[in-house]
Image (cartoon, rainbow, N blue to C red; front, side, top):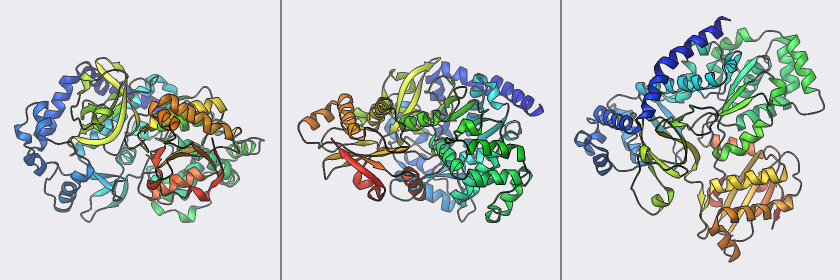
Amino acid sequence: MIENLLVHVRMFAIRHTYWRNLVNSAKNPLETQEKVLKAILQNNHTTQYGKIHRFDKISSYHQFAQHVPVITYETLRPYIECQLGSGVPALTAEQPVMYATSSGTTGEPKYVPIIRDELQRQKRHTALLTYSQYIFDPLAFSGKVWVMAASAVEGRFENGIPWGSASGFLYASMSPAIANKYLIPPEVFAIKDNSLKYDLILRLALAEKNITYFSAANPTTLLRLCALANQQGDVLTEDVELGRFSREAELELDVMTAIQKMLKPNPNRAAELRKIFNSDRVATFSDLWPHIRLVSTWTGGNCGMAARSARTQLSTDTQMVELGYLSSEFCGTLTVDCNLTAGLPTITDYFFEFIEPDEWDAGSRKFRLIHQLEAGQDYYLVITTPSGLYRYFINDIVHTEGAYHNTPLIRFVQKGKGVTNITGEKLYESQLTEAMSGAEKHFDSHPNFYLMLADVERQIYHLYLEVNGMMENTAKLAPYLDNALSDLNIEYRTKRESGRLHPLEVTLLKQGTGEKYRAQCIQSGQKDGQFKMVTLQYAHQCPFPFQTTQLVTVAI
């Protein structure tokens, strides 16, 4: 098949260019990072920010740390708005060609500048990830490739510069060797109505049995697609049979044009689908798409439980691999070994600084560089990028785990704000994740959604949980979690024993609550394709009305 031959040729080219350079860089991480920092400063020393912080006088990391402060997005917002509005090189000498959007801490969205070279860097990252997955399982690319992407352009500023998703832009501009394999046309991801978009995606996917690769940043997307397929199986099956889409009238012309050739009558596939949907059990992902060999998604951090739930939807022949540490600001890691959950930091493109969470919280600003990391440790991450983020505190915690040649591998653990403190216990989201993982195994239950809220006023932790049906042993879950958290966090144990923390409560939620919560977060500014769930929050900072969706509440 010519398409598979083109993929093989493309992978051969990547191996002898991008991959070879990556390996050489990983052998000398300090030298690589010094070159990256020097290039970023040289390219931007004439900007307003570069002049203020004397980029042209910096010749070492020590001087860089002295002259340039650690900042957050709000520090950069005036510079970003200045360059966007006037074209004056406030942050980058090169004008941004687009802005990636993300939710901000102040309620206003963040617009992260993306220069043209950055798009080329991310295209290279995608090529390297694809190569890594290809050598892991070449047959994963033998059929159709189903990627859940974001919209490349969500809007434009007055000067015409677009804002949207860099990953969506890359999806729309992928090399023909891979793009010819894509199941979903990029125009589909520009549909603003989520219900319409997902209905159309499922309509196109259900018609194609020979899908061998699936990718979505968050594993909850897979669960959502499977649930929707079961809910609307009859309508979508009839659409497949007749070669139509029942909501065609709601589509824009460009979308209709992009999918027109795909809307062909397929009675044989429809017959297969009817047999699946009319069986006496809920259809799984592998029932609907039995040839999927590889699923690429986030598997760690607070996505771990959703990933395990997604795993139950797949055949034992299907491999689930880590997508990598990604954000709107940058691509943090590359998965160089699909057997691992940790990835190689993108040291050839961005400058990394690390600091242990306890030191950061204590006010220390003594950072480590990539070659100084200790194995098995957690670190806050500070990044410097060619697109204008200089010593940017991204509020992410990563964990070191193994090495590739001489470069430590890291994996995302949690957002920094996933830490709560009612009375001195400092409970971390990663501790909750571990406790819930244990509960999942102990009670043989796979929650669809959970969220723990720290209620400072009541001095209590409250877990909200959605499971399929009524979870047995609900009354036993609260004491189990309380004991698990006590084992993981000695300060939590101390505060519980002293009575300063009241007994933990658990509330079971109605089916669909997790999806409603997700929808509210997206409406508030988070990206659908890169939705990141923070499972540990303060009650007063969570506006979702859980009281309207609860079934039963139990306490210790």
